[in-house]
Length: 357
Image (cartoon, rainbow, N blue to C red; front, top):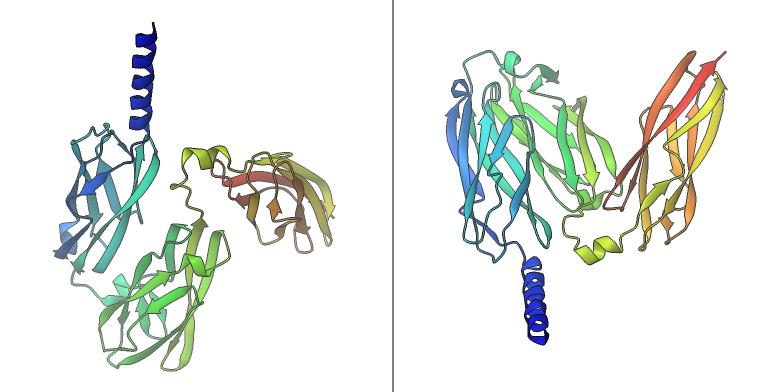
């Protein structure tokens, strides 16, 4: 009986050791340059191969691309030790002439927790022969822009992703370009654009340099030949990166609990300003940090009494409605609370009311 107990203990210890093995994934390469490709060729693909050099199996849980122009496909089955798999990244060049640099985020799940890796593809798409105005529909001071929005999508706090925006000089004269951006957005752009030249502006987002969370919309001012020409919108969704938390840290993490998922403010007379509130509690162990309260509409505003809650403590979420310019209507709007709760970092609740004369 004692011998069996010893064997069982050794077996449990071995299983625990295996469970604690870190993921050891090795890619043959993490960046691929397609070189010059033609726009009319459409989709091009590259296969990234990886190997499991650890002692425990892992799984590719999710692969996400930085934009809809890039599509990933990957090995879904668990990868055993010394096994291998692949991730195929496809870029659609149709309608996207010019240089490109796209990132793909890989989430790998193992017994000791998730880790992330980033794969990059780049290249240059030779455009179809067509007027510049057809490829660049936005005109700011005679500089043509493919878009006036620079979408970064979801950015884990601390990361510094880059995006590019294609521009062109639609005139027969050189144009002087100047750009003024917030301090957390680094812009690299040519100072002078030659006649009929196509080039790019590179935006680098320093997420650690901004105190805001969730959805952030910034304006970047454009001047051409020393005259204001318009603005670009840089959009990002800043989220905390919980992928490196271990099991012990998750067990002691804060837990955000709302007193209600819906609040009805009743009938509000047009022309006034009104408030309501609900409570948020930390049902976990470590302090709960309330990062931000984000409203769906401009006539709504959310604020928090205390931004840090110790275990078991509560505070009020204040909801403000500005009905001075609203019309008679039954409203059903959402607000989001951004916290450091790794299980539920974004909590959504509904605010209802009816405006009356």
